[in-house]
Length: 84
Image 1 (cartoon, rainbow, N blue to C red):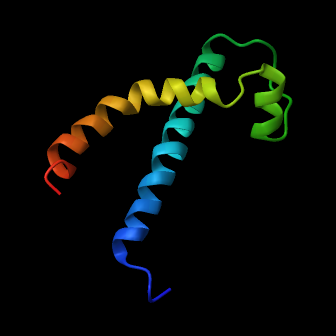
Image 2 (cartoon, rainbow, N blue to C red):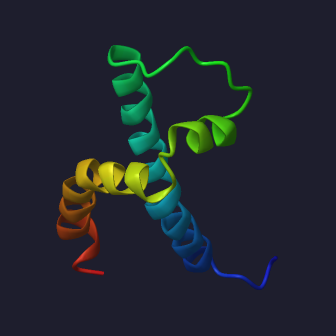
């Protein structure tokens, strides 16, 4: 691990944060939406069972999360990363 540069770890962290963070934000939006407009009572033990039962999938929360995170990522890139 000593031979790996800090920039590599920053790139790995950035890669995972560009996938995981928008998905979690989109999933939170879907969960809040289902609290307001419930389909049926939640009787599921895990997130995977709930996603499968409501047929949400992966890409719907990911797209909703990117619609929210996209402008923030664009601003961050323009302010801090464009000059690197």
